[in-house]
Length: 365
Image (cartoon, rainbow, N blue to C red; front, side, top):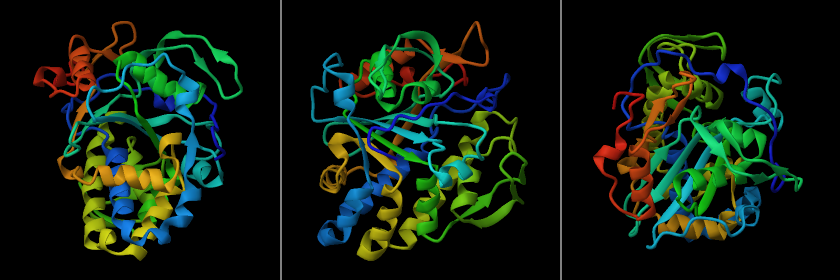
């Protein structure tokens, strides 16, 4: 992936959510990429005493100049030392490996498969991850493409299409416009990065809760414990046709379960205490990592990781942006008010999020 590369393409029809989706709790959603990021930065931080082992990793990281793309018309920074990160899990088809993992050549470009604003309050002893459902209808602001051309503002655009149509900088701008929250850093990992991350630790054992027969992905598992390699793990956390009612929300429980298994595997292998194992793990993860220019070097990423040493991934609070079903298109959702305004206001002020701001009409939470 070249620097500042902006993927193109359009969402496919299989991304359309179904009516009558299961009601799920508003907390604990789509923490996959946020927790993987937390593990990654902890690994890098732990390797500080053997910094020389990580010199090669520096060239793995791709940087996107978000600040240059967005200019000065942005929300104010937090009044404290807190930080806000936008974390994206991308289903990029760029490169042969990503193309194969994404299901072949039927879909071009990439979409933001997972998106969340991770808020790290002053003191950096805890974190809050706010997931933005990918089928949320938003107003996309006017954005500049990689070729210098301008894409006009548009209303009622599905959130995950912004990445494919204009690129990561426009996703940041869209989030800032809808929330009023200044995004300090941007991080993205793609299909191949997730696969290699799992393969680097020799696979992850999960206790499959029910038989899964997903013809779309080829995933075929019986209920019970299975040790999954990288490709199987990717299919497991992305499957939806083989579980529940087939909606996008059906796979959330599998993602959370897999994360616990992944973290247990990392702990059992003592990756954080072994420079050699930590290097192998971090090298695999950073090969498919894209960040803003402020973090696009080993030194910057390590310094940031060290500043987050007090954050325990296990205590991370996860919240879904409160949403309601759209009155025109019930297959889409919109930000629920006043809950969403209250939520974003708390993040802007580095304040505690009220319980009322966590209730989502679309999920009954």
